[in-house]
Image (cartoon, helix red, strand yellow):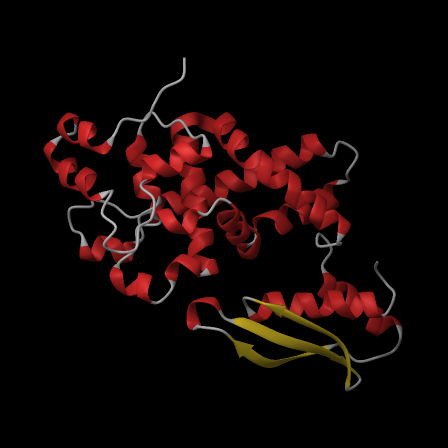
Length: 263
């Protein structure tokens, strides 16, 4: 039997006194909140029995600093969310690719759970609009910051796990993994492009590749870094990313393509 998530006003009087102020504040858009936890859950088809778990998963410590009536931020949820993701993604890959070797499965999992990938999942479900941030973090563009999107996504996964178990997490994350895994395989993103490039350079008798940051564009909360990779002083590839590390990996991948080592 399908359950509807209760409206906040109804929950207010069912809650114990220490929770009432928190419940009332969930629909307050004073800090740029565009979507309440209930609205997010409804849009994503999530059925929470304990919807306060979702509320906490969406609460950043900056919000807690400004709203003492909110009892807990999402950092503890985020902590376990990382472990839940590792297991869930590993199980999904094991069943999705029954012929894939262990090393390839490990590389695929790493590609699916790193910060940029989880931030992209958060963007795909428009999680930023439901994040409960302090005014300062909101003004600084926190809703778009990859690290914050990643952390909140992990916390939401943990909340789903506590409320609905591994099956609930799998139902939520499965469609996201499906499209992302296909892209990773098609574009060799499961391969360590920097290691591959270094191995090639050494096999040719060259020095190890050098990575040079050429610049950064965009606001502080969403910077894009540009990196070139040089071998023997010659630029072999260029890449961009939300971190220097991501840009360096993109540059190495571009170099491998330019050298004809990958498609």
